Length: 83
Image 1: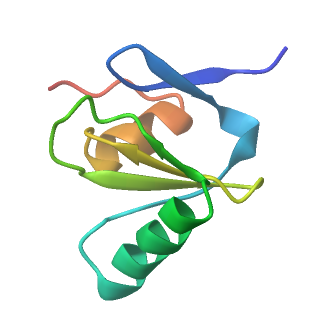
Image 2: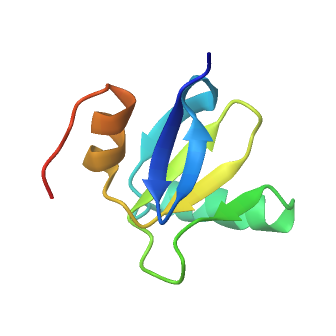
């Protein structure tokens, strides 16, 4: 059975497909985001809120989330985190 991770607002991603969870503020992440947008590989799961983390999948898709990077990492590790 494959485990789904909630990345905010009812959106989920398969845990086994996640390669990296990174902060969106660096220049390389901004370029990666633009490249993914141009190549139709960008998934915006922020519901119009500020992007706080970028999830990179093994399929090359870039997923934007409004959750903090630390929150998503804790969920990937199976730990509960108080907000």
